[in-house]
Each structure stands twice: as structure tokens, then as C-alpha cells.
Length: 351
Image (cartoon, rainbow, N blue to C red; front, side, top):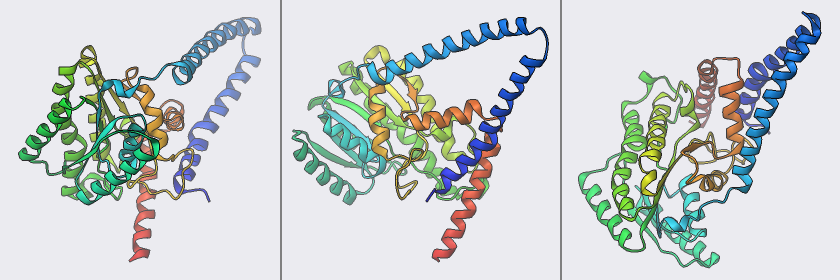
């Protein structure tokens, strides 16, 4: 059965992309056939068409090279240890598993110690199954209520890891979103503050801690999991998308600030994927499993500062940003209102 998100996006594509572009193509062909000197129009159209064709051929070849021929960096060359925040579930957990498979030891960071211990045991079992001799450690930290003692202890812990094989990578996956789409003044002020604390302040704090340690070794990598919602207006999720936009802007700037020191920085902005934030029953082209995002993002390190890592989300972003005839903000506002109504009705049935 087709889920609500797919239905909404299908309606959006039909109403604002396929039908308008189809009409434009038919109209253009009609003008060329019936107006003016045909030979002159055809010559001009041939030149324009040739130019556009060459552009897209070169563009396609470049993308093909980047996707299939460009050699991905070996993540173990950055250092022994990868730090993953939000490591106990979703995309954070997928990053832990993938980096472990590639031979990196992992420091898990989250606010729930029981979940951290459980994730640690699962990764240790996975490491044995894959024949990887790696270390798995954890550190309890709540980025919504991080204290000066937490920062001091975290600095001490990361300094120890720096001496034990080197601090190679930070993957910041911790994030909070409002459970119910809402306009700003209807959002709980505590939730708004938590979103800002975790999505922005926590990321800045982690970067300030790890970057000096990476600079000492002249190598390292930072990956920030942003969101496709930050690439365009996202009403009903305004605070969340704004904080993700902050993280995107910071990461792509850090990419240039620290490149000369051997530190690669990458921001990825996927749309929906299966996680605690969006509990889809099964994966689809639009809503993949998080491991699909992870595997697609790692080859981008050292080459890109920002990207849609997954092709389906890249196509969706292109449709929304480049091909739609509708104002993006208004379309997403309508989707947000429909989603809110559906979620309210669902909660009412449960109660």
C-alpha cells in the first residue's frame, strides 16, 4: 500500500512539474512550427539544442565518474577512532556499523547509558562476525543539557583516544525535531530550545573539541547529518530546518577553513529515511533505510563539502528546487498541514 508521503509527492510532481513542463514543451514546439521563418528558427534551435545537449552530456559524464570511477578514501587513514553522536539508533547506529566494517574503532555518544551498553554489545558481536579487531567504547552525554564538567570529561576522553591510534572522524548524527508539525508560536518553548541546543550548540561544541586534536595530526574528517528540509523553506518545521541550515553552513565553511590542515568536512542533507523521527513500515525509493544513506556518503569525503548522498533524494531535491512551477514554501506548507491533521487524528484514535 502506498504511504502518505509518496502520495503527497506524486500529487506534487503531477501538479507542479509533469503537467506544466509538458504544456511548455507542447507550446514551444507549436511556436517553432507555426511562427516566423522556419529555417532561421530551426537553425537557432539547433544551436541552442546542441549547446544544451553538450552541457548535459558533460554533466552526466562528470556525475558518472564521481559515482562509479572516483576512488573513495580509505577512512582508516584518518585515524583509529571514529566518534559518532546519536549512536544508539537510526543513521547514527548505521554509521557505527559501517565504520566498524571498514576497520575503525568507535566511540559511541548518546544520553542513555543503557542503550549505549546495548549498542556496544551489538557492535562487539558484529566486529567478531566480520573478523575486525576494533575497540568499542561509549560516553554518556546529553547535548540538550551539556555542562562544563561534561565538556571537560569529553575533552579528556578524546585526548586519550588521540594518543591511542588517533582521533580520525567525527560523525554528528544527534538531532531533535518537533513531533508534530506546527507553526512557531504553537511549538512548546522547551522543545524549541532543545532543538537549538542539540542541532546547533552540540555540533559547535563537538567541532571545537575535535578540530584541535585533528590539526595536531594534520588529518581527520567531520560528517554532519543535516536535512533536505534546510535547502528550501520548510514551514511547520521552521526551527528544525533552520538549525539544520546552520549546521550545513558551518560545515561547508569548515570544509575550506581546515582543508589545508588535512581535515575533510562534509555535510549531507537527506530527506526522509527510516528512523525514530520517521517510522516507515518498509523502505521505499523515497524513504530508504539509513544504511543506504551512510554507504553513499562515505565516498564523498575529501571531494565534496555538501551533498545529497542518495540518488533518490538528489532527484527529489532537483524536482523541488529546479523543476517545480509552484512556490516551494506554499506547497510544503500544505503538506505540513495535511500531515499535522493526519497525526492529530491518529493520536486521537490511540487515546
